[in-house]
Image (cartoon, rainbow, N blue to C red; front, top):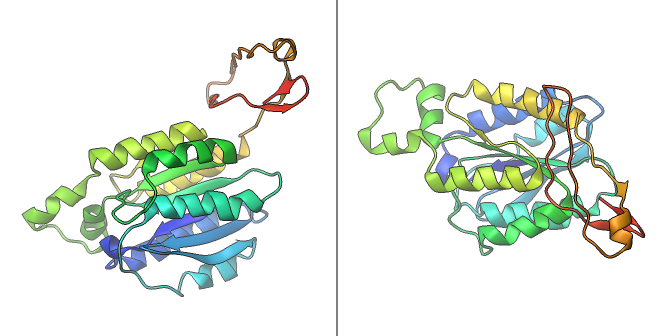
Length: 237
C-alpha cells in the first residue's frame, strides 16, 4: 500500500509526489500487488490492489493537492478498511509525507494497537517540504522564514520512529531527495526477507506466557519481536 500526502502543505509539489510514487511502482517486483491511497483532509483510494503498473502510473494523474492533513485518519482507514480485507500474504504500508497531522479526529496513540493487530509492516518516508522546494525547484536562496521547513519536526520524527518500531518496519527521515530511491530499494529487500514465526509453546499450554529469544546469524538481517499472540491450541505467534 502506497499512502501519499497530497495536503496543502505539499500542493506546489505535485510533480515530486507523482515522480516519487512512480519510482516506487517501478522498484517493486512485477508480481507484487500495489494499491494507492491519497489523503489531505479526506481519504481517497486512487487505485485498488493490482500488478498493472501502467494503470497505477496513470492513476497518479487523477488528483490535485490542497486542504488539511488528516494523516492519522488516513492510516487508520488503510489498516481497518483496506488491509483487513486481505487474507494471508505479506502486507506493507509505505508512507510519503512530511509527517505533520493537523486535521485528524483520531489521536496518534490510538493507531498503535491496530497496527500490531494488522501485522502490516510500516515504512514512513518523511520529507520536509522545504527540502522539496530547494531540490526540485533549484532554489539556492530560501526565504529565512521557510528554513524551518528544511528539516522534520521533533514530533514527526518521534512518530515516524514509533510507527516503524511497533510494526517491524524502518523509518526513513529524508534529508536529500536522492535518498528516496535508496529507501525504496531497501524496503523491497526487507519485504523479500520478512517472515512471521509460528511456534508451539509448552509453557502456553500450562497457562504461562512464553519467553522468546530470536538469534540471527547473518549480518545483513535483523529480528523484531513486537508481540506474542495465541493462534491456536498450544501455539503462539
